[in-house]
Each structure stands twice: as structure tokens, then as C-alpha cells.
Image (cartoon, rainbow, N blue to C red; front, side, top):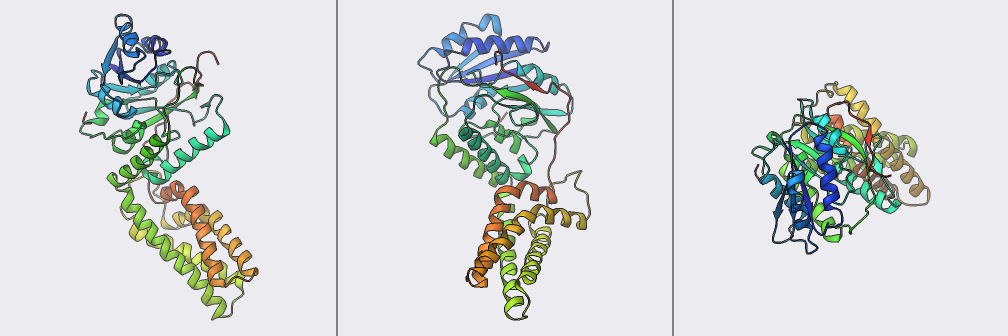
Length: 385
């Protein structure tokens, strides 16, 4: 049985439509299902409207006395669920209920324990988003992938609010989500064997207002920090930072020594210094940072192949490093200070843009499954468990 949770607050304008369309989509799969509406005491009668459909759409309503976050509402719904497949979707029709048919189809692969509705994969997208909202979403996803690179490196849409997961993948798992991103908790702590993603088009909001604000954004950042600590990725980050600091010292020290003590040309000295720092970082990361990297079947390459990939990934940062150093030193800045500025710029670039790829060089718990499903779904008309 599929137990689909819909957390609600003031969704009276859409609740009955989304329940009817979700029920139709799930009936088309031939699977048994239940729709669980978890309502945070909406003053607009959302719970009563949902309850009115109990007889026709297998609807159950859970009323919470106070609002304590969308993600916790989902966990409360899963606590009373009867199904062996647990799911979640929004009740404002931005998640097209028709996508459920494709999610269930993907879950018929016996090896797949988690199916994510993705806005970011091939065929997915968002309808009528401004460039500011698109950029904000991209930054949020990229920050998550950088903070939790082993967990999210292969997930196209870790911010998705619509997915299905087998209950066995959450057995013995204590879910402690904060804010509104329950999928992050499932991805970081769940015992799923494989996952897949099904593309869909995120519909424009037709009714109601967005629940996202400054408080939710802060909760999101704190949630990422807690997951990094609980999954051990924070310790890896600290080791990685320490190695990066020693690499910076190597870069600046070698460059200054070769120019001022050995009389080398600045260009040659800078190239040797950057290469020395990259090699130092690579070896120390191998010995210290990633000595217990999660196994990745596709990452059985030898050390030379890993080094070449590491060099390629860090190449843009190295170019920025050299360019800024040349620019500043040519403008009269001392070589030590110019080299330090170059290291900071190159390191910042790699830190923000390349961390997930760098982590793949060493190891990644990859559990992506290739499952054939419809390319995309478009909107109609456009704890312990």
C-alpha cells in the first residue's frame, strides 16, 4: 500500500482538487493507497474540506494543534501510515498529482527504494519562475551538495518536496527534520539501496501564498549543519580544510622561495608552486581526509588516474590563482601577498563550485539506478519508523 502524506495549512482553495487528482493518479497504477492530510489547524477549513472526501478518495485527516514545520508534519503523517511505501507531496498543486503514476512505475524496480520527483533532471523544470527565484533555488541546492557531498553528489533535485520511499529504508532511522526539507533527512539517514529520479514541471502557484521566508531559510542552513555532523561529513570537511591550509602554505612558500632565493622567473616559479600545492593536497587528502571514503563501484581507478582527474577538476581554480597573482604582483604588490590573494581566490572557486566533483575523485556512496520511466510530467493545463 502507498501512504501519501499532504501537509497543509490554509489550502482550502486547492485541497479537494489535489486529493481527487492524486487519487485518480494512484488508482491508475492499480496499487492500494491512502491519502493522509496532516493539517496544522488551518483556520480556513482545510481539514473539514479534506474530511468531506474520506468516503470517495481513501482520505484520512490528522489535525495538529500547532504549526511546527512542514517536515515534522510529514513525519507525523508517516507515523500513522499503514503502507509499505511512504510518500509526500504539496497540496497547492505545484506538484502535479499526475506525476504519482510515473513515481509508482519507477518504484516497481525491486532494487529501487526511493523515487524522487525532480525539477532539475532532463525534461524537468519550473513554470514562470523569475531569474531571482531560479538563482536562489540553484544556490540552495549547490550549497546542500557542497555541505553533504557524499550524500547529494548524484542527486539532481535534493530540494524536492515530492517523493516515494519504501518504509523498510527508514526502519530504525530517527528522523529529526527541521523546516521544510524532509528529503534531505531521508537521503542522509535512510538505508535505501538505490534511488532514481523522475522529471516533472513544477507548476506556478495558483492559490495561496508561499510558506518560505527568512526563518525557513535559517532552519535549512542549520539542518544541513546537523546532517553534516551526524553523517560524519563535518569531520571530513575539517580535515579537508586543514589540508587546504597546508597546501596554501606550500603554494606561497615555494613561489616566494623560487623567485627570491633561487632566482627563478615568476611565471615558472608560480607554475611549480601551484603544482606542488596540488600534489601536496592530493597526497594529504589521500592519507588523511579520505582514508575511509565510502565505497564507489565506479571509483576503482588507480592513484595516477585519480591524480589526473583531481588536477583537471582543480584546473580552473589554479588558473584564477595564477592570473590574480600575476595581476597583483605586476601592479607592485609584494609576491607573498599577491600569491596569498591568488590562493584565496582559487581556493574559494574550488570550494564553492567543485567540492562535489572533488569528493567523487576519492569516493562516493553511489546508489543511483537507471529506471526507464516517462521523460517528464507536466502540470494539467500548462521520528522512528
